[in-house]
Amino acid sequence: DLSGYDSYAFYAQACGNFTLKGTPIIADLVLKNIPCNIYAIKAGLFALFFATLLGIASLGSLFHAKKGWYAALFSFLAPVLFFHAIRLENDQLAYPILIWATYLFYKARITKNKKYDLYTLALLIFAAGFWQGAIYFIIAFALSSIILAIATIPTILLFGQQIITKTL
Picture 1: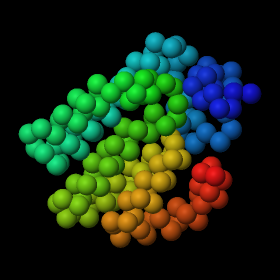
Picture 2: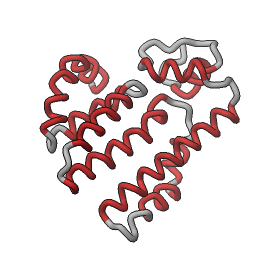
Picture 3: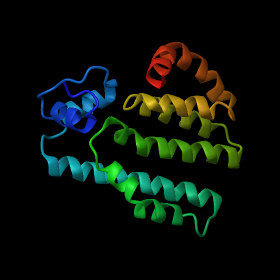
């Protein structure tokens, strides 16, 4: 039983030796189709980390055009973020998507353009296919967006029990 040892369980799943029950559907598809090679997996995780840093730089640039990229630099230099990013877990697959969803969410607030809320919602739903913790982003962002507030109702109806049991 590899419960509680996510990195080992997901690596075993990637190598076809283990099936982790409850893995979100998109994460399950990715894990079953990545090569069983630790170097290839680490290279992929580093690429996801780089995509996350690009999202953080873009997000920072929304708030300070000239120095916003410092946010990505400081994130890169934070050892806890880097070492967490290179562990094979399903949430690492969702992080870049969540950062870009956050970027679009704030871009919608700054530009007052509601189409960015729709893009945000699409990315959050996609991210939830990798990691169900993305559902919390929908709920949190619903406080500032009518589009996301409407999406929160079916989200709570569909995942409410899971949210409550996994949180407690």
